[in-house]
Every structure is written in structure tokens, then in C-alpha cells.
Length: 320
Image (tube, rainbow, N blue to C red; front, side, top):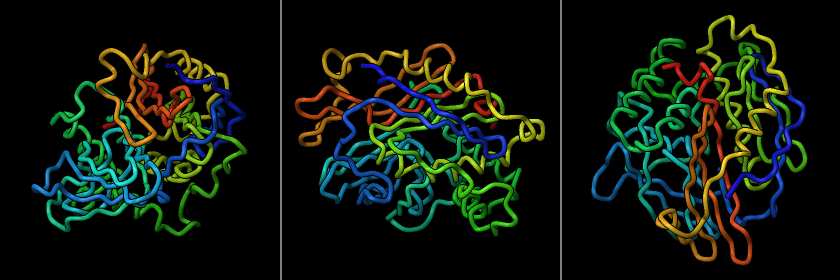
């Protein structure tokens, strides 16, 4: 299984961010809900709260997609999804999470979902070392990455990533250097983006349909704006990323092979959700690290529902 043909369009700049639209071939309809349109309840475990686990239930009539880096707010502490998750209608599952609020362990049993995403600085940690999905070392590094916003923007009492996002979005428009309102609107049929930060590509994020992409695009840009607070002046003043670098990075992601959806050991990862089945995928080759989720529907070839590819040589991958 491979990424279908990617087409990268003309980029737009938002300060040091370069945003290139991406189109890809595919059937165009997966029957999946996501973002705020997905009716997914999130709670602490019934057996008692645990930092690296939460319980999610799809109360909607269609399969639901939660994304890696999606923020699950409230509960004993704010968490973020460790990887992409598909839930069938009525399905309940315990999922892997990481804490993004080191200074709190009290609160309610339930969480809320606004489909917000962690900034790239935090998500970059999720993209590295996928062989250690729940390791304490990674949780410590994520706390370090969250605390870097405390140093850059002023301390949060509980070292809360959500507090920093809330502060940023609450700032008056005239006091903000950049706003998600300044980002280019999604184009017809667009399914993803290549993001450059400074003059180098940072990631490619692509979805199986235009609708899935639209459900998460603004949240992606809003979270990226928080990353700008961490950048040194020379990066903030850098010119736009050349388009050829974005196209070259997309070509490197497209060249990856993820293996068969069924058959052999990978079949152990396949989950059934009624008519739809899903499996997580990942692959690292050279400076490209990818992770996402693929789905299979009856009488159709398996295809990607979501994939993120990271440039592991980008300086942001080292910020903590």
C-alpha cells in the first residue's frame, strides 16, 4: 500500500509559515465523521484514571476518526491522542494518550473535544521513535516541549498547553502578528497541505477526502501559530520556502511503501468497525517519518484516511 499520487500547488506565506495545498487521487467518500462533527465522548478509565490512557466512545451513526495530536481537554488533566484512531458506530475503546498539563491531577471524569490540535513542537515528539508508544521517556520529553511555551510566553500555573492556546486565540486581532484568518482558504478538492517553517519543509499532512481535510484545516493553522513563539529571530525573518522543496518532500513521502493491508503480521493490527476496517500505518526512511491510518471498505481497495509525514532534519524537531 502506497500514498496515491500527490499534487502540490502554489504556496502562500503566513510569516515564516509556507502553506502549500495538496491534492491526491482517491474515491473521495469514506463515510467517516471527524473533528467537531464526530459525536465522540471521552472519559477517564472506569477502573481509575491513568495518565497514558483514556476511554473513547463513538455515539454517532458513522465511523469516527480521531487524529494523532488531537487535544482531549479536561478530566484529571489535558491529554493528546498518541496516534490516529477509528471508532465504529457505538464502539468503545481505551486509547493511548500523553499528558500536556504536567501540573494538574484533579478534576472531572469526562473530557471535552473541540477538535483542536497540539502545535508542531509537541506533535514532533509523537512522530519520533514510534516503537515506544507509551514510554515514560517520551512523556517526559513532551512535558519539556510544553514547558518551552511557559518560558516563551509566561508561566502557566499547571504547565497547560491548552492555556497557552487559549491565551493566543483570546488576544485581540490587532495585537497578534498572525491570525488563522490570514491563512489561505481551502481550495476545491484540496486534501492536505505541505507546511514549510522557515525555508525548509516540516511536514505533509493529507486526508482521504476533501471533507476530512476541511474539518481539521483551521485547527492545524491555529496550533502552528503557537509554534512561532518558539522561533529565533533569524527564522522569523527568513524568506518563504521554495516550492521545489515542498514538491521534493511530497515526492519522498509518496515513494514510501506501507505493506499490505491484510496478510502476515500486519493483519494483527487490523480492526473491524462493521463494514469498514482500519489499521494504523507507519514508515521511516531517511529523513522522512510517517504515521497515519488506512481504511478498507467492501469492494474497494484499501486507502489512506489520514497520513502525516515529517522532515526529521527540520530544526523544530529538536526544540524542547
